[in-house]
Amino acid sequence: MARQVLEKIAGQVTADETAAGGGSGGFLGFGSSADLSARPRTSVELAGNIASLQVEVGMPYPVPLRAEADRLRGRLTARIGELTGVEVRQVDILIRWLQPPRADGARRRLL
Image 1 (cartoon, rainbow, N blue to C red):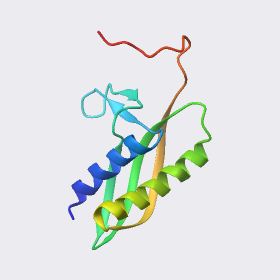
Image 2 (image 1 turned 135 degrees about the vertical axis):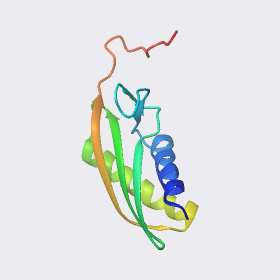
Image 3 (image 1 turned 120 degrees about the vertical axis):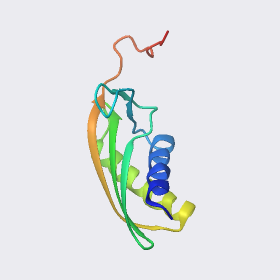
């Protein structure tokens, strides 16, 4: 299994099955904005059939960060194993930003 495939799967599982999000827009990481619907940045180290993951995410605020990180770690380990057969031994989660609720309670509209 290719490392890049595992990175995309990990990012998609994170975006689809947890409260975490990534950044969107920008160029080479500059000017990107917090987006809870975007796929987070991931990196994978693969040795045979064993993987270590690093995931950079943003979280909605307020949430219990430790509990959400543990839940994310568990989902990634389980889903990547189910989908690919690769054993995930370590998942490092870097929480890069927190997104507070909007003051007006509405979602931002793009024109």
